[in-house]
Length: 116
Image (cartoon, rainbow, N blue to C red; front, side):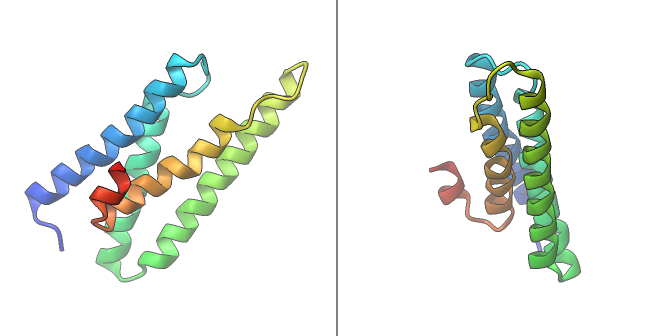
């Protein structure tokens, strides 16, 4: 179980890691998703892991969230490619699950691995 200080520091780390990814995506010109989207997706992975550990169904909750992030990535890529004249890049869509998994790593107390 996490104490309050550890919870807050881990939550801020998960938000910061997602925000860094989002900041990089905004800087490269991806206007549809950015800092807030990736920060919240990483935070969602962290919260899902913490709740899953508290309830006792951590692997199930983590996998459901991961599959949800894959669905979001697929839908983002699909609808973006419908409106583009040429096939759009897939980098932003692939970073959705990565951002979620960084939050999961922070939630599982693999902070060093998440940062590196």
